[in-house]
Amino acid sequence: MMLRHMVDRKRMRRVLLVVPLCLAALLVGAIGPQWARAAGWTPLCYSDEVDLNGVACADATHLWAVGDQGAIFHSEDGGLSWAGQAPVTGTGYFAVACADATHVWAVGGTVVATTDGGVTWTRQEAANGMGLYGVACAGTADAWAVGQYGTILHTTDGGTTWTPQTSGTLDHLFGVTCTDADHAWAVGQNGAVLATTDGGTTWTPLPSGTTQNLTAVAHADADHLWAVGSHGTVLVTIDGGAHWSLQDSGTTNILEAVACPDAGHAWVGGFPLDDGKPTLLHTTDGGGTWASLNGWLNAGVYGIACADATHAWAVGTNGIVLAWDTVGPVTRAAATSGRRGHAIVLHYEVTDKLSVVAMAVRVVVRNSRSKTVRSFSLGARKIAYWQRVSWVPGTRGTYHYYVYAKDLAGNTQSKHGLAKVVVR
Image (cartoon, rainbow, N blue to C red; front, side):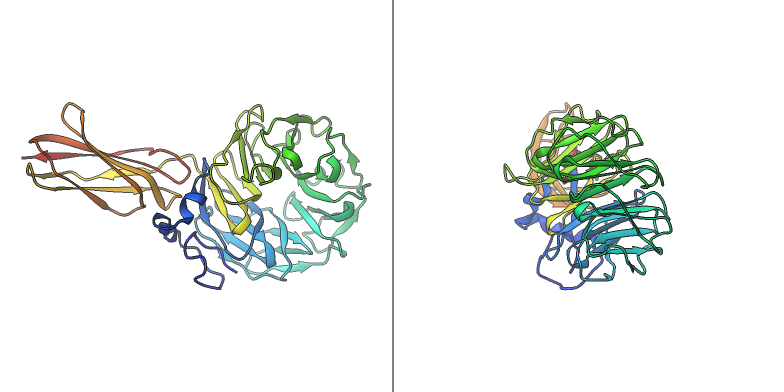
């Protein structure tokens, strides 16, 4: 299997380290526009062999993504490049959680863990034949895993031993989150919400107000949590789960993932159902309003993680990895001169932290009165590569040319290039 940038989907059949410049093939490939139009999100890479089901981050730099066929990938540069880590088994993984940059758990048909950043992964005996769908940790020692038929497993020693806890339900549990070694929440079928305040000695069912299946839960703190699920269900609580309110998501799609760095900001991802489009939602006001970021993204979203309000990642079908991106590209221009009636070469460059393709590139020439005398609409162009366009001036004088561009997330340039042109 492989995780790679969106180019040449059939080239190599091995795990590889992703090289960002590979996405330049979007310039001429038909894949580009379908993957690149998810407002606010920049596509980083994809796999043509596995779906990615979960993602977790220790900080804004260290990330893990897991998926089908035992796929485990790791990034140490905020998702710009990914390395495949040797799977312990061929069993697929549904979720991943990390306590820090070295301690990580992944769950599926079993539990695997690493204490050295993924150099080695060890299978931990925990599942007891039950599939596990969610995992969360409160540090390097304490973690919970949830799964089929109300399964809740807990460890206080880093996974050396996993102890079954009584959930009081036979409903499948799909998601779990925890704020510390005592407080945790789990969600599942038929609107099930469970909570513990004593490390799982007792789990208490909470009224969610819905019978929809709940697939994921995330916390901003011990009071503020979101849960999402089928039929576009988004629930929020501001009192630790005692009361839940239904928010208007604007969709009836299956929502599979949620992440929230604070009580105001959250991201939600889902899978097409009613309209054939996946769902990507974002709120900056605690869920009072949800902005749809669907665009033309051609992938379902199964997992979302965030380090803070500006760093988030989403994963899903075909191994797609997206990064939240709110900073536009920087463009540059170089001063030049030439003669009236002769072609003058205007050089320009576009750079961006995440995107490796610049979209909607324009070069605009203006005279000394700021009147536009020539405009070049260049479409998609390579990133971090000096390029050129030729202009034939009809009049002597001093001109300036400006360079404009957008990145794959739709952000306009944060700084535009400007340079002088002297025509003799």
